[in-house]
Length: 81
Image (cartoon, rainbow, N blue to C red; front, side, top):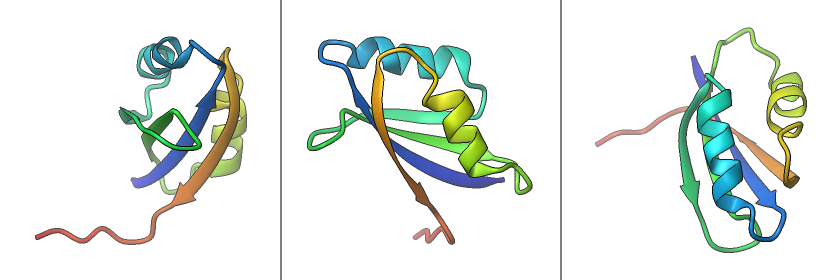
């Protein structure tokens, strides 16, 4: 499994609805955070090593209602204390 982080920009007033949809409909979602700044949400997804990130974001995340934009970060290594 590999974590992928996606910043999500929502339509005005729809942030909580989008967060609920992410949690309820996408099994790969691990965590969804409300954040400040250019985007309203930051979602962490755990994908299989052979799963195509581009297809996943385009077909599962961006197709949800009320999402205006996404910005995907791919992680390489986790550091723990």
